[in-house]
Amino acid sequence: MTSDHFADWKRREALAEAMIPIIGHLYRERDVTILVHSRSLVNKSVISILKTHKYVRQIESRELSIVDTFPILQIIADLDLGPSRIDIGKLALAYAEDSNGQTLEEFVTAAVAGATGENKLVRDGHTDVVLYGFGRIGRLLARLLVEKSGSGNGLRLRAVVVRRGSDDDLKKRASLLRRDSIHGQFNGSISIDEERNLIIANGVEIQVIYSSDPTTVDYTEYGIDDAILIDNTGIWRDREGLSKHLRPGIAKVVLTAPGKGDVKNIVHGVNHGTIADDDDVISCASCTTNAIVPPLKAIEDEFGIVHGHVETVHSFTNDQNLLDNFHKGDRRGRSAPLNMVLTETGAASAIKKAMPDFGAHISGSSIRVPTPDVSMAILNLTLKKETTKEEFNEYLRNVSLHSGLKRQIDFTTSNDAVSTDFVGSRHASIVDANATIVNGSNAIVYLWYDNEFGYSCQVVRVVQHISGVEYPLFPQD
View (cartoon, helix red, strand yellow):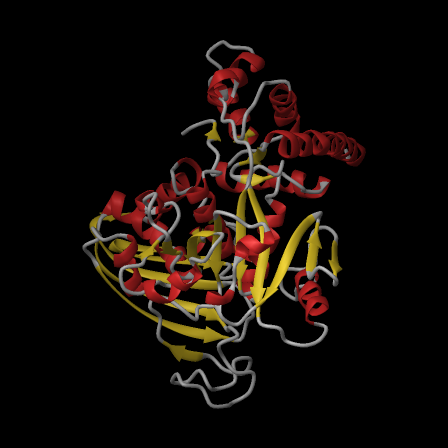
């Protein structure tokens, strides 16, 4: 029996190895991203590909074998595809459920017809992106943008703008991009060109521009044109301040913090469709807003919400002190790694900006805790109609799989899940199904979220949307 298991493992391992060059070719040459249940297989190892297939059992209550997805990938590789995202996991399960008497090739070809032949997207040229600031979020955005370079016709990170910190500033910036205590090593190669002030990451030349005043930079001097600038400093949060970035070479500004005044606060998956062509300044709200708004929308749509409270248990941030010291905010001056710190959150009030028609009152508060990343939001909701834990969880599981919020909401049934399990999650939040409490019309939902990486993924999705490189997904729900 043991030898049978080992032989099966070796066979699946060989298929995963054979997948890698096909997935890479599709991505680099055609801007086609291969997924398994919304999880990208691009640049993944053999083990990661196999684990992604294994994970499907948690959410679909059945196995997904690479034996079933590999022939689908082979069929896709032979099609005349345009830029798209194709979920071979969902294709495999859909074919197993109902093939309509078609062969696998006929079924797959029909399912992705919207990305082939005359229907395929044609994109010639890239969209320039500039990062203003290069801190925790800035460097994660840089990793994601480099990762998503694809054929070169999508988003291209052209520059980062920072204040010079020391004579060896360039080396230190590159080193911080290369190594991260939470998210690990950069997946690839990083070098620097000191003469030209460049960081070169996987072949992407990133111009480092030194400036402390956005009004002094002319980006066209660096060959940057019609770019999207992502401000991750949080220094300016209203339209007047953020408009300082609208310099030669910059077409739009995206803020990675809650916007003030009339600046639209966008949560991808919920209200990104409200972005107009002439919106030149927008905000991606906060990490917590992105974590709670998609589940709140899903719950409101199905059960209705009378009122509720959100309590966030949030990892400490650079805004806090390592040891007790002066801080302009209450309690945040106390040592972050030694204390739980009760503080305020603006996420509850930000819900209205993302969902103006949402009628329920949601209060909120936050506790900062001595962990470096991954937070939890606890939604305590009074619903308009009664339900059960089983019905409630099954609904959210389906939302995570088959709705327009599947990139925002993930779902876990693990009995042993803890915060470090969600470092690197690309979803805005993850429903912990086993922790759900339902008592008639009262529901308490526990949501994990990587407040750094998951949020950064949401920011990139917004940038992809406004730049026109948010490619269609197949099969379509």
